[in-house]
Length: 326
Image: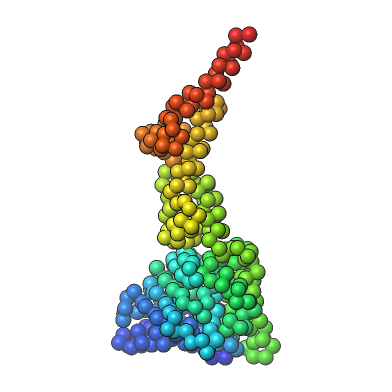
C-alpha cells in the first residue's frame, strides 16, 4: 500500500508548483493542472494506492484540471474517477455535458476521454479512482455517468458520498489480505451503485429539461425567475441549459413567459379571482409592471387582459343577474 502526503507549505516557494503538479499527476494521471494563483499555488494532497485503485484527497485554491486527448494513451487502461465535492463550487464538463457542483455532490469522470473539472472556489475533493475494467460497470454505463451530478445528501448519492468519505479514512490504515480485498470490492461497488441509481435516460438532456420545467413551475411568481436561477436549481450551467432548451425548439425565457401568461389567463377568467385587479393578477405571476403585463398578454392572446376578463366573466355575471331576478 503506497501512501503519498504533500503540503506545499513544507517546501520552498520556488519548488511548490513543480511538486504540486507531480503529486496531482501521481493521483489522477496525466492532465493539465492549472492553478489560478499560478506559481504561488498553496494546497495539500494525500493519496493511498489500494491494489489497482487509489483514494485521494486534494484541497487548494481555485484550479482547472484538464484531461485532453493528447494525455490519453490507448494502450494504457484509463481510470474512472468518482469525486466527492467537500467544499466550494465546481464545474465538470465531459461527453457534451456540463454540470455545476456544490458541496456534498458527487460526480464521475472518465479518464478514457477528455474532461475538464474547474474549481471555481477554494476546493476540497475526495476522489476514488479505479481502472475502468475493474470498476464493475459497462462502457455504456460509463458513458451515461460522465459529468452527471449525484446528490450526496439523498438516495444512492448519499450512500456513495458516505463510502467515499469512509474510504479516505480507511486508506490511512495498514491493510492487507481479506481487509484489502474487501476495500477493493467496496471501491468497485461504489461505481456500480451510481450506475444502478440511474434510469436509462437519467443522464440525457431530456431529464434536465424536465427538471428545469418543474423548477419553472414552482418559481413562476418570483420576479427574478430566469435562466440563471433555473440553471442553479438544476445544477447545470446557464449555457448548457440554453442548449438543452434550444434542442427542443424553444427557450427558457419562452417557457417562463408561456407558463406565466397561462396562469394569468386562467385567473382572469375565474370568478374566484374577480376581487383582484388586472394588475394584481399580473403581479401574482411575475409581472410587476402593468404595462409589461399588458403588452405580453396582448402579444400572446390578441387582446388586453382587461378585455379578456370582461368577455370571460360577462356570461357569469349575466347568469347571476338572471338568477337574482327570478
